[in-house]
Length: 112
Image 1 (cartoon, helix red, strand yellow):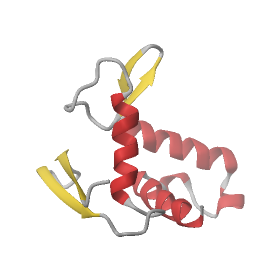
Image 2: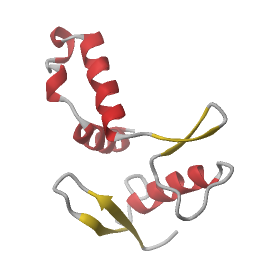
Image 3: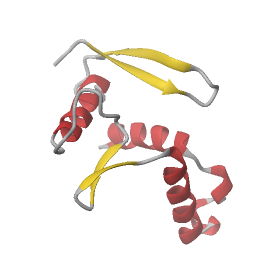
């Protein structure tokens, strides 16, 4: 595997454009961001018609490449919270967003 991965964010919520962030491989194979990104890219490149320019939001659905937006993810998270309910989760649907995916994924990776 590589020693690092660089990710370019075309547009972030603070209206920053073309911001490239480089993450170094931590040496821990379980929490290795470089390996995780390699797996994402490998999956996307397995889709017919993808190139090195295909965005990481790409998914294969209904026989073609589609892109998942942050709004779609937020809607799905809010629907999940509403379905399970505040009583069980202790959070309201307005308190969850795409940041929850990042922190939840990191914790899930760590806990195995």
